[in-house]
Length: 334
Image 1 (cartoon, helix red, strand yellow):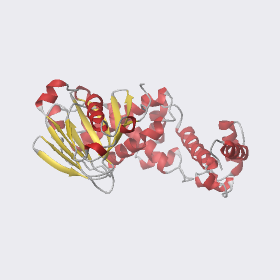
Image 2 (cartoon, rainbow, N blue to C red):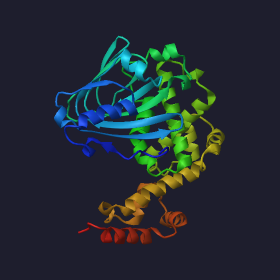
Image 3 (tube, rainbow, N blue to C red):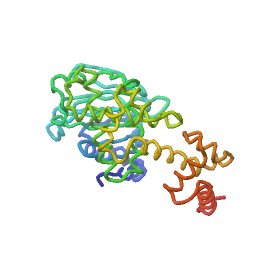
């Protein structure tokens, strides 16, 4: 279903002997046709989930060590004419394409082209191979195709700047999508595509040539990430955010004109979401409500109580009591 993560599929739904064959067919349909080999076919396990978004698709995979080859025969069989940008979470991944050969470890990112033969080695490590991938249709990327090809099968630094933003997006999307309505998912899909495009453009020193709307979306994504990382700071204000991003407060408010809420309302909503999570967490029951609120930037208890009641229709104390009651009456509670 578009706009939601597909129910997680895995080899648990088939016999141990049939799991590897099922996985091969699933990869051919969900990603691209490839030939897959594995040393321990009878014990192969894997799981996958996918989120269809406007302009792109994000997929997450976890599986046993294996090898994959895509040949001209596979390409003639099916070619979505896309790039896939992928982030490695688990065991090392070897990628060979366009005469480039690299080894990626957890936290690394790379790009591959569906229209060119490739070879991948998903190796055994401290963790099983695990990836998150975003599909980028070739004709939709506002970058010269010849330049984009320069990045195929090269190690793309992903720990700073736009790479860090894209990493945060890919790792957090599944949790975010579970709480988003359709309008928010539309924005998430657009943001993800723009972040990926800006990331590639930066690697090519072509960021200034990106469409104005793409640059705007990337700046918004940077600002949203900054807000999320600084919610505990009581000085998190529009003026502070604008100064950090070297824009005027007026420009910041103009950026948010197309968002669901203003800058101040966004900060307040996300702080309230963090407080709500803490109030339902049994590990936080010994903490006073005022201490929980202060942790997320609400230094005046009365102001926090008013804001929380306006958002949830009950006081923080009432909300915590109700959450505790529901937890104690839930099936399986001891």
